[in-house]
Amino acid sequence: MILEGSREIAAPLDVVWDFVTDLNRVTKCIPDTTVEKIEGDSFKAKMKMGVGFIRGTFDGQFSLVDKNPKSSFSIKGTTKGMGNTVNVAINITLEPSGSNVSLRYKADVIVSGTLASMGARFMDDAAQKIVNQMFDCLKASISAK
Image 1 (cartoon, rainbow, N blue to C red):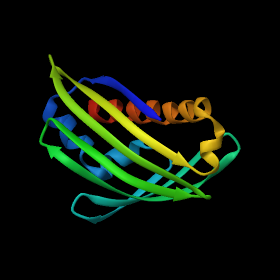
Image 2 (image 1 turned 120 degrees about the horizontal axis):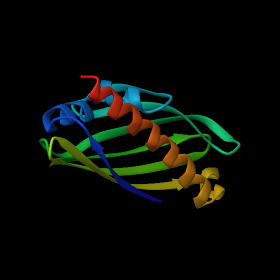
Image 3 (image 1 turned 90 degrees about the horizontal axis):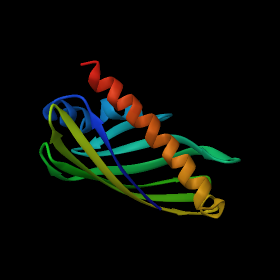
Image 4 (image 1 turned 90 degrees about the vertical axis):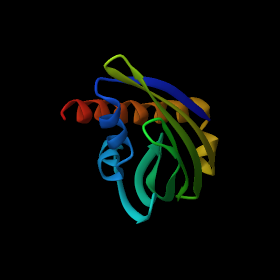
């Protein structure tokens, strides 16, 4: 499943970069998620997720990679839970847009297990809901600075 889009954030580039690359701040914007830094730019995450009647906790390990300061970075990792595995590769690009920053994202999400049988429509809807909640929180948190 590919999720992609962009959001305009009303803040300077350095403020947006500092926020989105700070695990402690950005994960507060991901619903029902806690993180623990492992080393460097690697971290463990515990997420409560659900699609339809399938709900539970997923444990994963992720890394921030390919960092180009104030321009782009990627997050790659795998999470497992309830007999499901989710592999994620997310590319984030930041571009100044007047006094705002355009944040573009493209996520390649590969799901196996019971969740994969739910169908693309259910998966897309659930993923888009999480993405929207996350970006609403990001924009509000960054704008509050």
